[in-house]
Length: 284
Image (cartoon, rainbow, N blue to C red; front, side, top):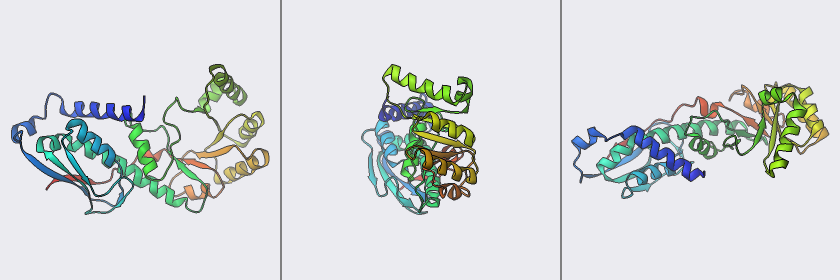
């Protein structure tokens, strides 16, 4: 399923969830032919995200709604800014209002915190990654928001990369069995997927490097000192393998990890505990 199809299905489901057999409040108070406008008012400083999706919501519900955009995705916004004005049937505006706000507030919150993490990495070669710790059904939008904020997507789901986590390694019987199994699986099915393996200590790192055939190694819960040793080990053995730091890294500690020379730093907090950005859709 394509990203466009996922977003379309999400919008349809969310509208059905919210409206049910009808928005009876709007239907009883607003004449069917009433026309009007609302503006998307920013109430908190941050990075704007979700404008394109908001347009999809409006046009999915009512193709005749018109949207005049003043600030697009990725814009730095502050209280008082107006991102867009939507015009058309008042009933349509009111029935799409909450879904538009829910999506834009969450996406903007994710883009804003991602941008803050990225600023901590300035001057280093490290990039911040998201994880699969996302809201069920909204993953594609949350991962879009990470990219709008300047971060990168780790993987979309279980289908577009092989990531051998600690449980996979333990159930497979160790590092070597897990890597060999992944390599054989791809060869037998003629699939081309990147392979990443999680290691929990320097011994497992050295074993993974000895076996070879992986594209990236995730350093799980390493200290900055251990991470630096891991970077030096990889440079000495095989400088082509990417290194990713993961596990409990915060905005206060991310710089220390980045300065070790790792390629990527994954942060689940970008999506699993983000604060939405405050905004409202107000009648003009």
